[in-house]
Image (cartoon, rainbow, N blue to C red):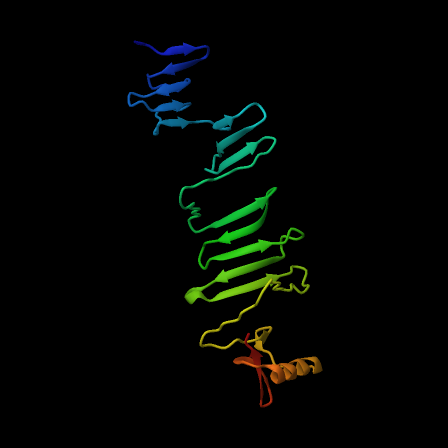
Length: 219
């Protein structure tokens, strides 16, 4: 039975309340650099607190900064990181944002503060983005922004049908927030073709040129 601290070179394996090396409390809690460990293992250090290594080249470094920021960084010839859960995986940001980054640049952002949104940024210019915003009563907005004032087009390219189902409401086409009315010859030609060739109809509450109405064909 060891009655005193065990001195190992300049550090100690101790039970006297000191933090000279490894402290083991009467309750069996282990502290490294800390006199009063509050968990089975607690590590105090102003640099990296934990390093898990396969060899000298392949390892993961875990550290907590002075502001509480936690970083988990892995190094190696592959360097993948895998999370395998038997059930759900929860990410809770407590009213903040969840960022997916590449080399420190955010390209994919979940905002859970207030109305939730998902933003995807362009890799060419981080100020150009596509966003999905969900507001009260499920009102959902898709938006695109080009920081250089160019037109940020939104293209739907599908391998199948595109189905617009407005339930009991209307499908409204707007231009800069105002209801759109076709005026150009090409608009009128397109409207006339749809009116003449539709074989099943739904009412669309936007094209209202004089007394004519635009209807769209159902599949």
